[in-house]
Length: 466
Image (cartoon, rainbow, N blue to C red):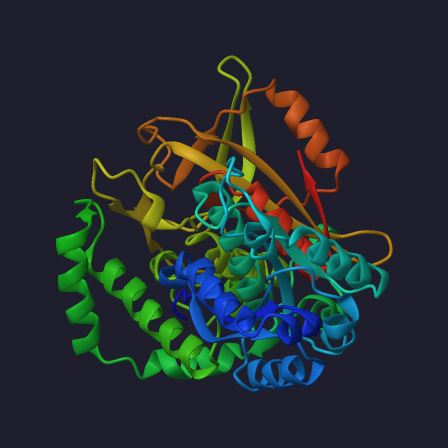
């Protein structure tokens, strides 16, 4: 799967031609300041250029260079009062996402504060001039303010840059669909043209016949090699036969090849099409779980939007998982999270091995498969959903909560976990449905609502935080 890369950024310091004419060393001093400001985020970003501009021609040259380098964001850093009409008309023309960093070198105004301190530390007015005209020009941008060494402000700034990277990444997501979307599952129905043009992900239709062709050519040696590795990684239940395990591994290898062949970032399948096809020995759940842990976006039942969302959220938050809400424990204020088998084993509890178990598929007409049994590492988690409103516009719903500390249930041999809301569970479920949430969700580790809100701004989506 595609690596999680640093945001690729071009930095534009915005200055004033009048100051350049008045103070001969002014721009050189600002270049040194800009180096200080950017030095604090260099380890977390891929900065391809850095330039203080006081003329429109300079700015346009730097924008062109940034576009040619396919940057994720233009980081605009006002260095003093900077007149908006020097920069904004050119910025309105570019498709590169904009993030404004409102900062200064001076941390404290002391008794010795003088004109030179003011000269080198007056950026607020210039920032306000630029942001006002960007808004009046209907230009989307991110914005953060704070001292250039303030850790919290820098964290928020990096969230904007990561959001820009993720928004650009979303435009290139390829989602493989094997089978058809679930019959009558209207909540994840989507206009694929609008998904491509308004958001970015592109649906790739996969052939069941091609999958079988690849499956028939998987070598037994490659299956044996994976089998040996799996026995070292997982706790293999004694009731799971080697035959069933080999079938699941063979399906895994075929699915890997199909995903590689189509350059997919995400994948979804409809199990009913696989069962009714008649050529599949089992459902490829084992490979799906493994590949989710390696970065594959996934959703069940042919849900391309949530599969794409999972791939996108991994880029934004570092990891992601697919799940559904199932059953409420009203006594302990818990909700059971699970699906048929699909769950990201990268988030499994660290204090025990994942069990590989024999699973008979509940629908007739297909053989048994190798399942996983585990629960998740407790900690903070954010649930994320994407859907569309009555006008076809995409929006996010997110909710910060906690994974409940629990071992796998004795009689429930599929991946499962619980969330424990701080509020009454019924109130959360009511608010989620009233917001239009669908029955498939993605979860990401940590409290990530602020990052998701920033992403929504740059994508021009709404974001409902429950």
